[in-house]
Length: 93
Length: 191
Image (tube, each protein chain N blue to C red):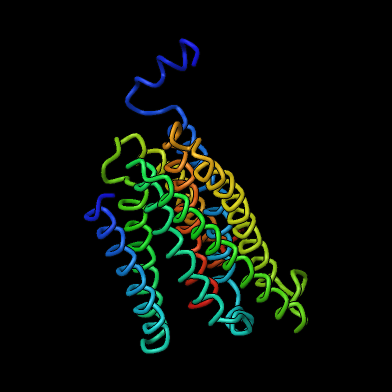
């Protein structure tokens, strides 16, 4: 068994746990908007830590990044497309 | 092994890995669409914070810990099986299964508490989203557990030695389930 590999996975897990702790602390300690920005930034960092280290994306071919990012781009387009209707209640005259 | 399978074993990227990534890519719009709809609906209407305050934060935090830990144990199972340490791989797979079952048990308890307090999927749009998103996620956890149980039994019997890459494929799926929870937790319990 490769001890260095196991140690690396353990360190990533520790980072993930620490980041969860920071998110929870931010939710109760910071003003709402600042807390939300920090919490979701941390969620993105945690997802990247899992994807790059546990899913080994950092050692994979670019095609796998594309397979993850293209559907994500569609979701973001959907989110932005729905925003005017639901958040600002913009309707056609 | 037939000639096509023999030829495939020599290629750099296994077909199963490409197929798994395609499958994972198809999961992103499913959960991404739900999350996008949740965000715009929540930003566009008031009163959702009151509804979310009835959720059990401590259970969700424990579940976050269980899933993050299970991601580590399954990647360690993959590393062990790759290094021909089947018994160690089986132990890590067994631990992953237990952590997944722990997650589902906690979720079932949380659902029971909420339902006993009268919060049903029909109780409002927040609850519809809550049960829809977490229920679909729990089904994915259950599917992952079934796959892990099959691999664990193969590891115990020793037949997994011929197909070590299967643990990697199961791990890819399990990590996606973990990533989805990484976003569901703050969306539902912290925001």
